[in-house]
Image (cartoon, rainbow, N blue to C red; front, side, top):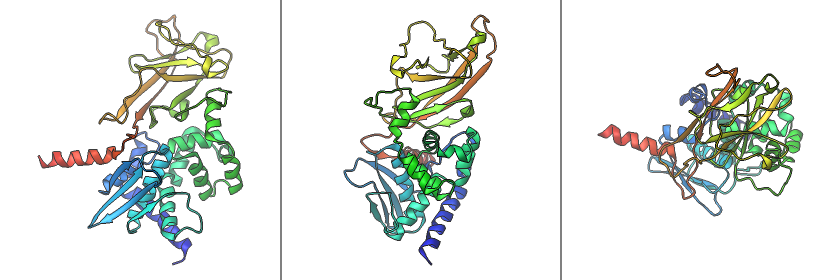
Length: 353
């Protein structure tokens, strides 16, 4: 079998895995990405995170058992890709191996190219890319916009670079378009979303741009990520946006001025916001109390809602609402079993009681 056929077979195997383990059901529940750790757990493949100096990850097959090692000391998108790559080695029947990169070129060993093809096909299947694009109202032409590709990568849980190459592999954009996209660095896209002009500002997480098209979705950010909301602006008619404080304890909603650093701090009074002018106004949804991440055994979920109301109407109905959920699944920097693996083992113990 020629290399091209082997790579096509790897892509087909990824599609079979997604079908076998009902990956679409998770998307139908409101999530936007394929979680490779859940697939690994369902296949009884142990996923272990460890801080590593050089290796990105490894796959071990021994005595009928299989396990995956992933370097936790890397960006989340790369962690997801590494896990999917190692999972490819498992489902493609490969022997034990270690990997120090997932940037696989044409000169790499065929098994590495196969595992990479599997990973791309698993995390960014065509049907999921199309589903997210339809949800967001993005056309093929929008994929030439670096900001759009960055936001797409966040929803699919991949790196910005991997997302660009995924679109090229699907022949949705050209390789020349990929190079133009990659000339724009993620940090610049984050600063632009936050209206920050000072390029020396350090950002430790990603920046999500959310709008009405994200209603009722479940996003999976890190606790260090920031959230920008683009909301309809009807301040001219007296309607203002407020945080639903019963559901969103620990969050504030602030309008951007000219620079995100100049946004006023929250006072003790209830937060009431509304923009000037017409069209859409940009706000930052800020976390004030922090989210407990990997140190907690339980997944931390926040159900978020903001309402557009007329302040003078007591108990009046909202003119408009945006609600979504965020599941903060931070990776423990010290490593350990994946959350899905811990849950699987706990269920096995309960089943034996």
